[in-house]
Image (cartoon, rainbow, N blue to C red; front, side, top):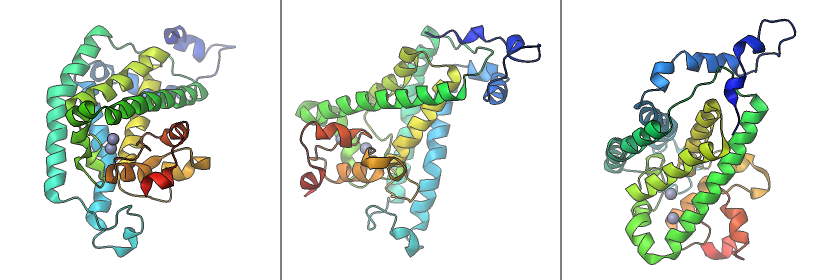
Length: 276
Ligand SMILES: [Zn+2]
Ligand SMILES: [Zn+2]
């Protein structure tokens, strides 16, 4: 595990011959100035909920606008589908309930067993980016195995994963509309990977936020010109279109994972024949 506390600010700045400050030092100092809040047992749950809502918001706005703006319809993966107010409210209520009853106790336990440590020095940007990419790939692999198992074993599917599949078309707030079992496992992967890989706390926050954004984008129901699956070359990234189809036809072997396109090829699965 890396020793981030070894980078004292006295060495990093000011002194003759000192190393230049990392690019991320200023934002890290800004975050560290909020140390009491970052160390609070409430922080992980509130941060999780607020980032989730913030990432869902633009897609919720599109959901409200697209029935009135025909130009937006071409970006909707299932143009005829639009979440009802009742479905949105049910997802929002469920998400609030899960954060209070399920995620909060789990994050308090994590906070108790692994007290927050805030080193003086920020991570180097290239290191942060590399760590985040490795963390995302590992998370995706764990998620893929979990997902595969819960589709292959009928009892697991019915008991734990079916709740997430009640939505035939995806929309942003359906991202975390899952059973408590599923939420806890995905939370365990998201919390365990930074520990396993020895992430700097700032890297951990970046990993968490990017992972959360990708999950929401996968469930957004929109295929936008700047969607991640359009930015990653060679069709390596499944993204929103694949995941929407997974909800529409869950018998597909192409599971929702971002790496699913690659991994499913190991099983000789042809996406297009599977859809048909
Ligand atoms: Zn599934
Ligand atoms: Zn889903």
